[in-house]
Image (tube, rainbow, N blue to C red):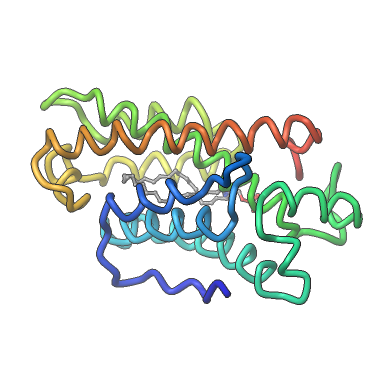
Length: 218
Ligand SMILES: CCCCCCCC/C=C\CCCCCCCC(=O)N[C@@H](COP(=O)(O)O)[C@H](O)/C=C/CCCCCCCCCCCCC
């Protein structure tokens, strides 16, 4: 059983996140919700270690993870083993608000979609970090990745707040240190290992959501 979301005060380790994303895919390329959620929890540890200015982002991500964990732990939890089984179950039982928010504001499908969009931001950001130069700015890389992805789904006020938070990001070297991997070359190598895994999980979910017309859930 997945437990509740208590990620505060835990130390981040990129290797751990890499391992959870490795566990995400089944042999037939289904995405295990348990490991997907564990991957996000690891990332939130990182976010929390950057300071309270990122608290509003962390809070939203924790809320969404908690919704998914609640589904996984409730009486129909066996339907929430993979993203594929969740989508099938919720659609077959009309548990998703498809066009406007109604009686299912916390469906697994709409909740996961928000994290899925954020995973695209992560992919773009990590790729920039991986190929960055010594004088590259994390705030710029983060903002560029955000503008190319998540920002399209956020209202002005959220975009503004996110933009201000990005300016508070530590420089590239301090950022690498928080990852707890070792020298910058080792961080870059590990990012190179993590990115294809994250991209594959993203693409499989994207294709599944596209196939069921779920990419714009309210
Ligand atoms: C490998 C280590 C390096 C990278 C570590 C990154 C750590 C990131 C951890 C968590 C990322 C946060 C994920 C945010 C999910 C946002 C979901 C969302 O879009 N929610 C909005 C819509 O929800 P509904 O209203 O429809 O329910 C909600 O309005 C959002 C509110 C909060 C603002 C979200 C801003 C997201 C900015 C992108 C993340 C920046 C993190 C920077 C730190 C490096």
